[in-house]
Image 1 (cartoon, rainbow, N blue to C red):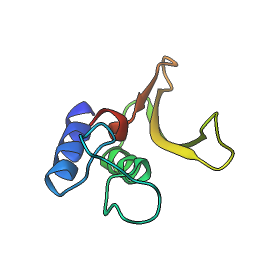
Image 2: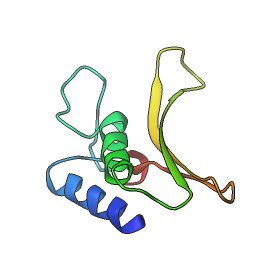
Image 3: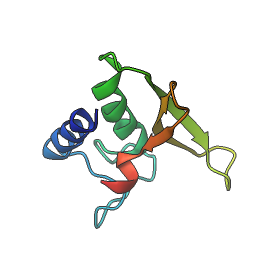
Image 4: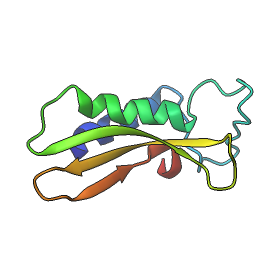
Length: 96
């Protein structure tokens, strides 16, 4: 699972996606940034995992409202191991 995720993130970086922690990254939400906002990265992460069947694991897209704004959201992927209840989050926009 992690291998597919890492490959997808590395491929996105190679095609020009920038994570939020890259020096000089700016995406004011006005369409100036070609690819690499959190919703773009969420799709990269989710698409790498959703097309496969994983024993006990479920992937889900999350759109969470930022606590300081009624209009700003952050997108990431939530993984849940249904068998054990373990939950992990994939947020490649934040971590690169």
